[in-house]
Length: 321
Image (cartoon, rainbow, N blue to C red; front, side, top):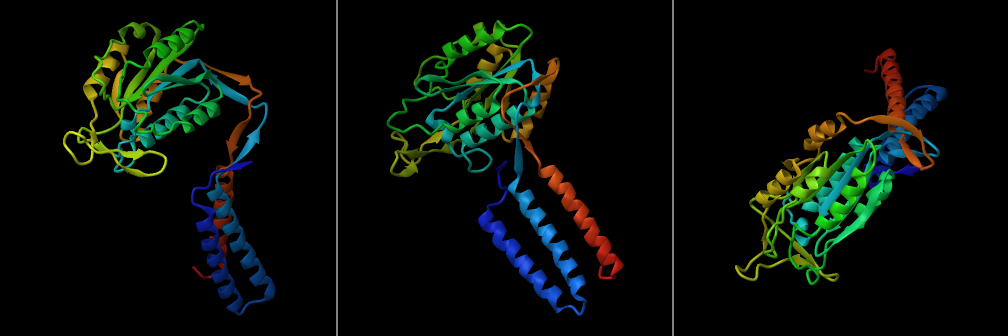
């Protein structure tokens, strides 16, 4: 079993302990029989235990599970240049925070598909070839780190082209597969290299989108040199450097690939995209030797609802509500 707490246990446990102590104090002060007090304490304790377990978000391991597989290959191409850590996503979050949330959303909505991941900054790197193991792709995402400012050499949107071509061709050779590209960037092309055409790759693409992150007002970037963090300075204008979203470049890539362009402000905006990708895809059930995880929070929530209904009925019968 694995857990993913919604709120840290360091907060939840003391709060629940205080609530339990308050309940014990009130119950013990009542002029009731011993058994009545014990039952009251047990009911409240059960509610608190269930609340604690729900907060843990437990998931049970399942071996050799039957999973739903889709005939979809989804290729994520992610810009990991330093500008993707500009702080202008959903307030002051970094663009990469938004990228992670968007990719998690897409992978959840298209569960059962094959996923692959290319990251690029000064060079491109295939972090994960096409695989049905979504967890390994999520793990690959978790390895992405902000580049050192001494390593960064500017943005070049042409860098991932060759690796994209290789993976797209490999996907297109599979029978009855639907190949999807999710190209993610802020569109900056700061090393002055002209943007090449992606049109030759369109023949291998069945759908997808170019996702833009950032704002036209721009966002500041903190430098991470391993020992300190401070905002990167603009050597020409002075003050904090700003990274500006370049939608023109992103729309050009989208046009070349014949997919839509979306400026992402929240993962939920991608609902229409994932639904359109599902349209026309085929599904089959297959036994797999992979370990999968089944979230059991729903069942705990149902149990809590039953106990709460029991508590309300009890209070009504005792004319205490």
